[in-house]
Length: 551
Image 1 (cartoon, rainbow, N blue to C red):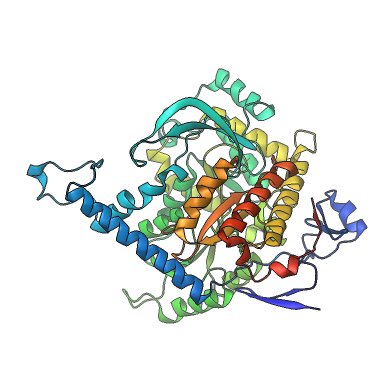
Image 2 (image 1 turned 120 degrees about the horizontal axis):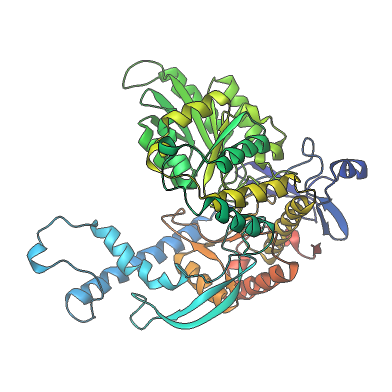
């Protein structure tokens, strides 16, 4: 018997087993030298053999029902009413005021915050502040140590006990497990300090690039398969500071509605017209491209001089993967440029970790601007932009980061260089290959088991970003606290970072996690799901009933 599930990307067909990757031949598996195997009901499924022809996991988004959306809005309404009540109690003197307030003689000054922003931060967010901003005291590996703390004033401030608690870490972007304080990367970074120190202490335009940075940029270009690359000391600034150097007020940016805040800020700073298309919807993208060409720039009544499409490889809040082949087709058809943000996909996706370009089997030179960060799969900080030599030479001269920021620390440059070399196999081992394989195993196992428990899991089963929908903001706060009680450190997210009705808990899976650690997390999720009812929200739970999923 075949069942169907409607998603934003079409109809997914389900048999008595959950949807899986198509089986690949033994010859195809051997030719690539990687064995990503997952067993379901005793049958082996693959993830990563033939990247040109294999069936890839589609993006899944179960739509919220109107009744569920109504209950979430009621929850928000109740929170806002009680927030106003607490504010009134403080003003009337019934509750002690812990806020920083203006002096009486400054009451007529313009307020620093709008009325509702102040209400949200001081009377709503602060009530669940203990679920956020948790200070860590160790490397963010498969586990992490948290400083124990408590509050006696309603979360306005915290006091520390001097003790630490070790928890399973599913909140860090340590996809390949390189965030370590021992091993080849840490040793190389420490040794680099003896030769080049801890900082350059000047901008590139003032004193030039260090030899280690020149070497890293050459390796990045080789890794992603393009002519040249330029590196920056902050991933957020890589997007926000370089968009103004690529487009201007006579250009138009066609942006996915789920793009990261750094891309949105960079688009706004550029002065270009911004048009938004529905998330990963190719019909919406094509219609937007047709419109900007047909109608031109309304400010000048002339055609736009440049069209720049901006998308992400993996969307960090959705866990979805961009439909890169179709985006490239539309980009060529309408004469646009393409900017691809691979912050979460570089290192974590593709048979050899080269991101969604490799995952889809595309030519990297079909993407005009390849952007990525070093703070996730490479266990460091910073970002890069790679592309043709002409584009990179232009950015070396025009990017404001060359004048107003310092380059990456030499020690971190060495951390990135060593980790990237391991991924590429330049160290003479298969360590990088095994890390990518293990990440694929962990991601698919964890996602399928969550679906089997009855949770709504967004995105693609190939993605290591695992958003589980909880809907109500109060449930998000509850999960954040209770998962910590059960020895799991994770991230809960609600409005304004997500839609108002789509609060969620987001897991970031790492190759460093063992199956036993993932099972501990799954047992905690099963227990909380039974208590809150959130594990009975998915209409697809019955598709996984009785299915045996092996790591």
